[in-house]
Length: 325
Image (cartoon, rainbow, N blue to C red; front, side):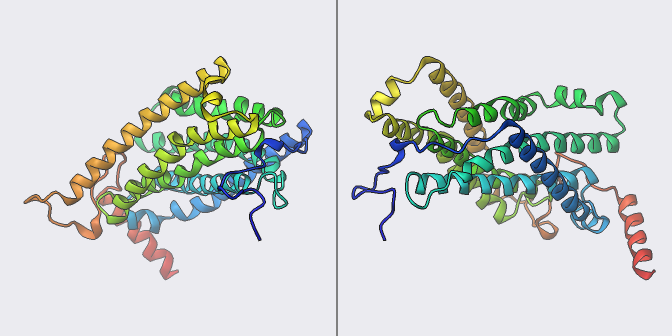
């Protein structure tokens, strides 16, 4: 059976049909969003009981806030993978008999819920870190987090409170769901970015998997965050039945401005990732006289504190007592 979306030249033929999406009441969107927030948070708490367990902390020589961050990054990786798969499904089936607009209808409230959950989960990690460093109470607030992490805060709040709700309300605007699918595909790099952070947290920066993941992360980030813009205009040209260049040139100034600003930010982050990957690969294969292998490839991590020797001994004693009981 041939694909319902692809002609003999391998080009989508149904994107321009713009099937009318199933509308959702605002109350339904709010209910689904609240359900998503609770679901993500419960998953985070369940996972964090393992990553903040004393045995886990001792095994990886990390502190509690790093264990919390590891749990949160795992949730982020799962969301990013689900988002990319949803986007791929929409682009592969849109306009055909295998397509269901329920994919976008129910995923967008899920995305709002995720970004709101992640914002507050990061605040919890932030407060846990300050508790362990003895910082002032004024920093252990939402305002303190906003001051400490302004860019990521703006990113999450803008997406969850403005851009995604706007997308939900304008789904019937051509090209509709396929354009939203392209946006969802941009999350394909998140699992690799999250895995990089997890491996770094666990002192595995010198491991082979860290290096390989970094290389794949750079490649995927380029195509899903920068190369995806070519697909944006391709989808737009199919929906409006114009050539690719006409789609680029006829983009409304307001849309073009947002596209350029977003692309500049993506190029900035790609540059940081690329240079970081080159540095890691260089360190991995560089031969130095003092580069003797450390225990289990674990190296000190300057981004967070490890458990002190006295805490380590005390924690091991506690575990032994618990097991004997």
